Length: 496
Image (cartoon, rainbow, N blue to C red; front, side, top):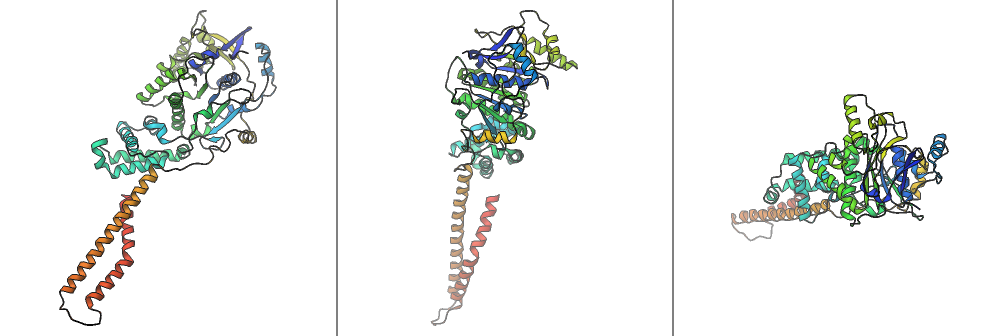
């Protein structure tokens, strides 16, 4: 049985994506409502049948229907007959549901340390000076042996840096209170957008995205992204970039295999590059170029090719373009760019083809066995075997209950990290300060009592002397009040 993925076809000619070339990445473009999500669904099903695990961002919630079988429909019947899909069978595909907010799937978490300062600085939209301080924060945490697991760890470390700015200046440079304050305010905004749920432990393990079911089908992991995109698009982009970098760092070199180990679909791909610093874009380009040697394929889904940098576009093998709307001069410029990105051996009018494409049709150019792009073809996209449309709440619950990862990520873990270590240091310092102040107070009282005693003529009496009485009275007063005074002082110093 071939592992190749059927995309569609026309006039008796089938258009397929070779599994062996699927780590060469790809792109799906098209205007809203032209069929990009269905094409993504068809590709995901094909990879799953070939035994390749899939990760996809479900930005509208309607991709979750892949977890249940499709229903008979006249358009499905028409395409099956048109494309001669003899093996077509409506069925469900093995699916794992994920959600940063843990509302529609298993929780997704990572740690501050794992995300790193480069992606985090972009997420917080920091300027160069603020980014430098964030880098210093990570360096200090590493040097001090402190883990940065969640937002409270990061906030505690930044506060500690402010309190010890003078001592840190020689090794880590100037630490401006204004820049620290700006970072802290950005963290507050990020916290309001739900980042508290994203940063922490247990962190997502990459191997849980790379599993197969008992039949050998690749499991399809869907990240529910509707709320995430609406409330924090930067956090959505940061997660995808972290995932890409983790795969690059953790997976061993694999070379060119007969099929990928994992395929990623990044919907709303423009968010990965929009407003990102050039240094980060360069890193993304580098990772996309190198991660294919780890047998990972990355497929970007967006409205047009101009959403991606040229350096990334040049690395994409499979190209699928749905209809392009060309109503304005800018639209026509985009149309020309899309058309020029295809190999065109038959001298087709690709611009005209792109405008005239109907829903469910696309211009397709896969790679051949030598890794070279095939000439562009107009194709009808094959119908998915699973349902087109979202799962109901009840269906989603059933999928979650049957999940092999049920309960694994449910309970958060808060082990000792930067926040706890810095709190312990502060408590130790407070205890030492309290003991020292108590000792000094007692010495002062003793000295005062001795001075008063020396100023009086000694006389023998069984009665208690005035100085002795004063000393005892003062000591009793100190004993009652010194604790309260020291607690107020210590709390004040901690809050500075």
